[in-house]
Image 1: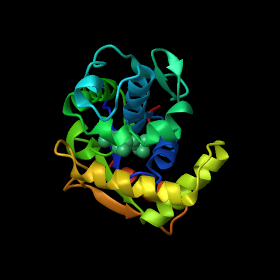
Image 2 (image 1 turned 90 degrees about the vertical axis):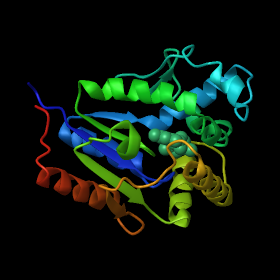
Image 3 (image 1 turned 45 degrees about the vertical axis):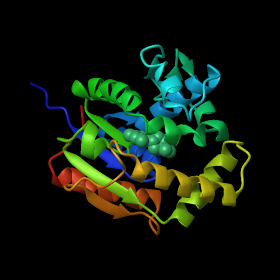
Image 4 (image 1 turned 180 degrees about the vertical axis):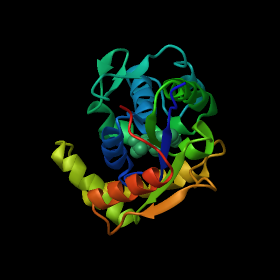
Amino acid sequence: MVKHYSIAIDGPSASGKSTVAKLIAKKLGFLYIDTGAMYRAFTLAVIEANLDPKNEEESNSLIGKVDISFNDIYHITLNGKDVDARVRENDVANNVSYIASYKEIRLYLVDIQRKIASNKSVVMDGRDIGTYVLPNADLKIYQVATPEERAKRRYKENLEKGIETTYEACLENINKRDYIDSHRSFCPLHPAEDSIEINTTDMSIDEVVNAILNIAHSKGIKNVE
Ligand code: DC
């Protein structure tokens, strides 16, 4: 039987998880799953249906009625449409933590995440991958950076994508999301006991990727042919 590997990368907003996870997946030939994008896509569905993301019951009404998936370039799709850029916009970013705090929606999306990981080698990033989604992951990384450094990165990323914002707005959004993500009752953000913490504040992307690949190799995680 072919062994499937899983690497979980968790950490707070804008700690560089998705950039790093994508590069590691590419190097190892694994599938990359951005679980944050799935919560964002659900949030977009709620907004587009003119429902209130702050209202749990209204938001729950879309469970089972939206098709959230990834296309072959790893972009998030909502009902078949590529919404990868759309889900980074402010209306989604400002409401996604509410959606991610609703247990029924989490269970629905976690089910999809586990199905994807069940027959493929994956690098999955999020908040609860090592603690809840893939508790038996072969490697668990907890990636952190100071809120100021994360706001700087998010601001730069938004500018590059043409999303209008300010550094102050990014910092405020990051602090707010850190609070909601780590204080929700179901699956709050916290490091798995067996995770390895990497503080990326003063590290380049390549340094982080190489550090994680070295740990992966030392654990016997191999490239997929
Ligand atoms: O990684 P991101 O910024 O795209 O995540 C968007 C939001 O979704 C963020 O507020 C935390 C939440 N999230 C979560 O609760 N669990 C995950 N596995 C991934 C993201």
